[in-house]
Amino acid sequence: MIELRATALLLHLLLAVIWVGGMFFAHFVLRPSALALLEGPARLRLWCGVFERFFPWVWVAALGLPASGFYLIFAGYGGFAGLHWSLHAMSATGLLMLALFAALYFLLYSRLRRAVAQEAWPEAARALDLIRRIVVTNLSLGLITVALGAVGRYW
Ligand code: HEM
Image (cartoon, rainbow, N blue to C red; front, side, top):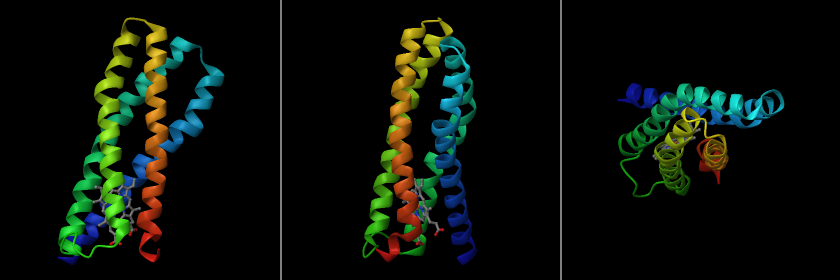
């Protein structure tokens, strides 16, 4: 089933590009632009709109990466026994990224949306700051994981 494995690998790579690229753009491009151009309330509303559109894609990536990755491990390598250490590490960082995103989504994003709807700006700003910290953590983990996937087998 080489075609199925190739499809899973292609999907895996595309999902990694979408998730990590989206976080990179949000942190290094959109955030400084929003800080420079918008006042607090407009900025917080902008982030709510951005997350509303980006997070469904993140769910697809955060669930699709482990699904396609574990498929590749079991169908391509016959399971975890004898697997290169970099793929053990990738499984760990991938699941950690999923757990962090789930915490961000269910605890902080709902708090941000509620606070913005009630125009409770200091509360909304606190929630956004915590979301930013998790995004920076996941971006760092994502870049490390991409390095593991790209060149880990040579280390
Ligand atoms: C539980 C989660 C994950 C599992 C089980 C997993 C598993 C795998 C496996 C088995 C491969 C194929 C390696 C090979 O044949 O050499 C792979 C490749 C790769 N993975 Fe993951 N992965 C996971 C999460 C992630 C995440 C979160 C990212 C990035 C954000 C990522 C990025 C990559 C990249 C860039 C490759 C290289 C693709 C290529 O060969 O061109 N993976 N992964």
